[in-house]
Length: 75
Image (cartoon, rainbow, N blue to C red):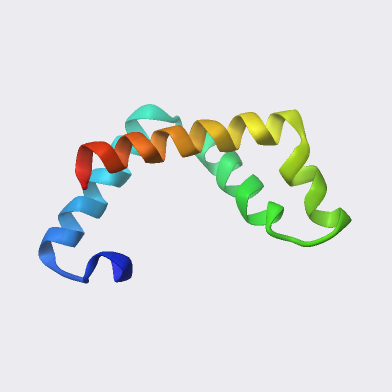
């Protein structure tokens, strides 16, 4: 909302975006991908596993594709 102006239109676009992502990715996979993204922000060896593992890369790329689709449809 902050990035899009905190208006009613922004609220509708953000809501649409959430709905599109939810229609593409089941919640469990979304939750896992978001976990990989947030833990991957850690520096050093702690974050490497969450950035470079095959499962992490697959989950994050699926999430990014869903977010891109949501941006195209809603914004």
